[in-house]
Length: 114
Image (cartoon, rainbow, N blue to C red; front, side, top):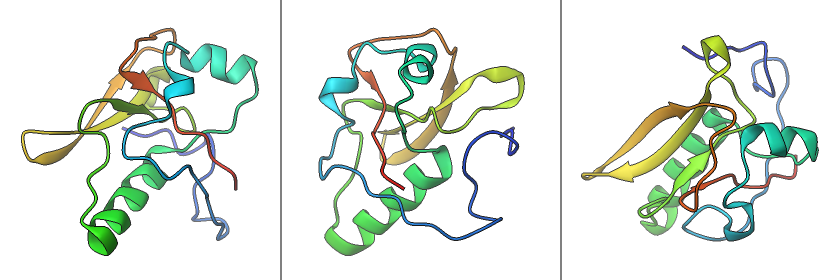
């Protein structure tokens, strides 16, 4: 369950998020945990933003995001503090979670400008 008290939501006000134009999550964000991203004060996408962007890019260009990597959605938190992750697996979008200290080559955030 998402903790809507954390991060941007879009219910309170409308905003625009810009991300890099790449199918896989940002290469320069690999091996950086959600804890480290927070310490570095890097603005990254929330899970609702990642899902909306993925849906739009599929509709507009038939582009599928995260076939080989997971997007670490550090702009969101689930109940208990775990961090949502999104990928494309077995023909569908998958939302899961990881611990804030987890870091891996295939677990990457997407930097956002909002």
